Image: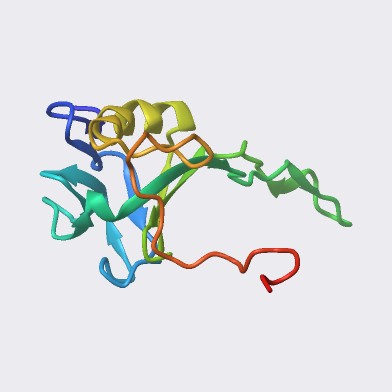
Length: 160
């Protein structure tokens, strides 16, 4: 078991043994949790099953982006009487951010540790495509509502 996958075109799961955390952003989903689930037309989180969710019909787009995973260079300590003591460095970790944007303007955020963007998209794409949900920046499928949040006022002179 690799901690991610889908049981069909309309479901997906990113969880154990993969470290995936929900970090808030949606009132409907609460402030924290574990794992990402897409099941039965809903998206959300839960430890062993989908326990906090919202309908996929409320999702406008999903963004999957890499994050700088840090890393520390080797550090040597040179002091009188000390020889070569210091801290061992480590390379940057692989961290991927998932942002789910909803029709009401919420941005629910998940963080996946140890998996890159391609791995995450491979798990999510079948379920998102079945629900006709685009990735952020891609055009929305025809007939798919994009937002109920009012946009900025039109530019130019007001109508007379």
